[in-house]
Length: 111
Length: 115
Picture 1 (cartoon, rainbow over the protein chains, first blue to last red):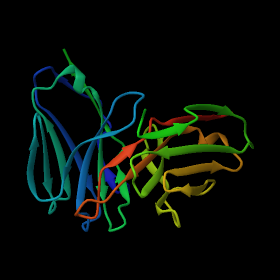
Picture 2 (picture 1 turned 135 degrees about the vertical axis):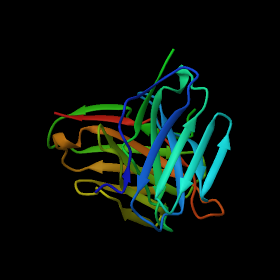
Picture 3 (picture 1 turned 180 degrees about the vertical axis):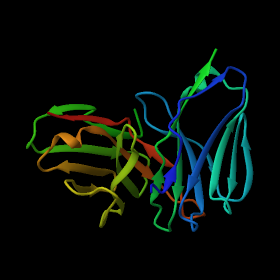
Picture 4 (picture 1 turned 30 degrees about the vertical axis):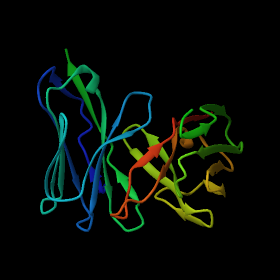
């Protein structure tokens, strides 16, 4: 079983809608959680990090963490075609900062 | 110029050849990583280094070796390339924040094809 699970998609949403991306992880001791965005043919870039249970908002992005359920999500409000990319969930499970990535969810925002 | 630079960006080689992928960074970070990305498998850690004297195996180190020549340079070698090492390779760096973790900064990637 992979340590970080994501649905590969594609997830298609109309422009202006809310896109909801989900991720589960297996290591209960994990403390740090990240969402990276990767455009086709490009390298991943960090868009959100979250460390505590609850919600963290940054502009149109909201990360949600539920450690009891071992669940992390990313909400993108007012989705734009420029948000079309693959979103990688990443979990740091140890003090040596070995980050494990999910396979990524491909998001398509339809104009 | 990119903060994390990988060379070459694209390489086609034959089975059995020795290949080196190089990474250099100007971010001043101590920590450097090599990842491999395959469709359906995501990013997987090959090797990581927390300083010049520290080298650690990652999830999929078999068939690979690394060298940390300086704080800013971390190279990945395939001693005898095989077709299933065809993939997109990323170098990354990071620094620690107060939580003992930190953002990964990726290079632009090196696409390797082994025929």
